[in-house]
Length: 434
Image (cartoon, rainbow, N blue to C red; front, side, top):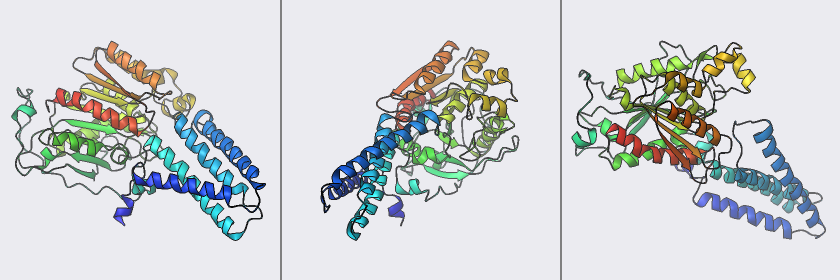
């Protein structure tokens, strides 16, 4: 059964089979009909379905703003084609024989699946069948024993890449698992966090390593960065080329539940900021073998998580030396701006404006020895301008800024994967891992 859940549905043979079966169903419906007078009726059904599909895309994306992003033309096309196929099948059911009725019902399922597969290929949300169905989970992580050696007060004079020699028993890949990070100071109701330990962290006398605190988007979960973002796989590949060296990654839950969004603030919605900047770092330094100087700590995230990364990185600059903002927003938001101000800021417009990344950057400037990496999809019409504006503000505030534009992608996980690949060489150089 595990092999079934591991079936790749984003690319490979599966989408091709679905597309071919859908095309075959269309041809069968168009040709196997007792009377040709039904063909115009079926094409009329397809035209109506196409219109309904595009109407749904417009409502979801541009009117209701259901997912907080603008759907790409490709996603709109796949939604339209899927509903058009359903319309084509349903229009030919009237007075049909039993076999044709069965064909039409099967075709409805195929056309819906075709649309879903096409959309998933565009946004890269579910790489496998198990991910799409929510089957499978990340197992609890058995942590290495915490080191008792004192933490040096001065920065090391040589880099890890210069001093580290991988032992013969270095594991080929890192280890991923869930951990519980107590909300001692914040009392924030967080779900389990996920930790990635690179190969170098799994051997005897492991070196102290940098820390990357990563945040998924909303709706989402810490595991999204593994399944959709392929974060562990990308880091394993880099570690393979660098003697097993990679950052220790901690992916805490900043939401509490997929439908919630406390916006990484301390507010009536929950003390998410204290959880992420006090409870999580305290747990990391207590349980993991990490370098503690801010130069070796980074915070990053995607979408809502990207907004969190620049909010927290700008406000708590003594904790994070690097910020990795992928497709973040211009300001934290929970529904409309008015609803955001009412729910999290007690109705104070001034308090809301002071919590925006641009205001935080202006208040905290200058940012000495701080790296800001900003990434956005080339076709991300909604967040592209925000990324440019916030990255410019970070540069004005004194950060060393790198801007990444993912070619041909939008507000999706293709952008995240590309951004991680492009950001790692810069982070590796800063951390002395290469």
